[in-house]
Length: 390
Ligand SMILES: [Zn+2]
Image 1 (cartoon, helix red, strand yellow):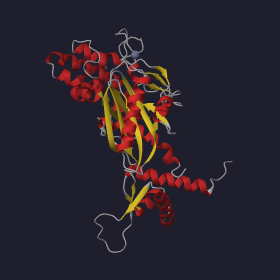
Image 2 (cartoon, rainbow, N blue to C red; image 1 turned 90 degrees about the vertical axis):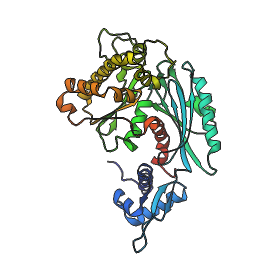
Image 3 (cartoon, rainbow, N blue to C red; image 1 turned 60 degrees about the vertical axis):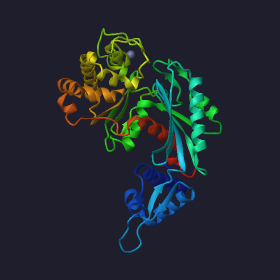
Image 4 (spheres, rainbow, N blue to C red; image 1 turned 135 degrees about the vertical axis):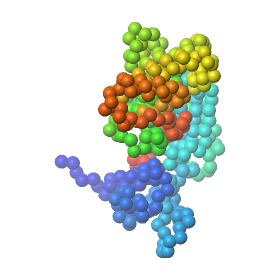
């Protein structure tokens, strides 16, 4: 039999629950917190006092309070003072942000990168960004950690980067060299781009209150984050969601990333878009600008429709397997979907089972390009939220 939790454990759990609530939902009155967390007023008062003393939240009188009597104080996260650094390693860009408790992006940097950078060559600019932002941050702030989003396969238990498209990283440690370059004793946690973007959209974006959702991320390749019945599907090693290598066209083109024939990303990824534009100039037009280039080129409109058909076909397969209530199109797939929504819908209607698609909503990210950065910051906040005073 499991022993009952000690008083300390209960207090730690309650502190975490309160801080997490404020982090996710923003300013909220003490009275509302008692209802939401199912704790009594004096407990909420004591927990809030502890979190305030630790500099994690603050309390204010509610704005525009006119009712008679003493209004319930509003509890807010100390967004400007407690923050994480979020990094995003993309095929054509490196991005970095300072993200406050509460999920607000406080500062951001972008670097257009060459594609062939090695791990040791991205660590330098990323750590320089962090130091620059740290320098610009207000004094007395508290930095809780670093989260990194990588467009590639990331091992679940230690963040080892198993494979990235184009840059060709294979089995590269990333958190250790970054931690070393940053100095100090900060933990650096690494996650997959699509999973982290999904986590952010599920927590604060378009997928709040959805339990079954797929986030498709397109860049050079195609990946997915999948939440089924409220749980992120990671797979055994952390590599679930490599939907770009789902075979949709047996005997089709050889996939330059995995070597199989007929992968979905060979039909809707960067190479397909470049083929349609009649160029093999990989990297000359950044991945995130390709759809705009195709829209501006009447000669590639028919090809764009075809690519939309392939997009719809792959989504239909996923809908039959997972029966999601929402599919989100992120990265390059956002513009591809918006341009070819008619083809995607028509493929879904003809290929997905009616029962599996009947309540399906197709959406684009609410957090836009910041989704993966905000998700990476969530990785860095995990420890603080589990044990706020630890
Ligand atoms: Zn493949």
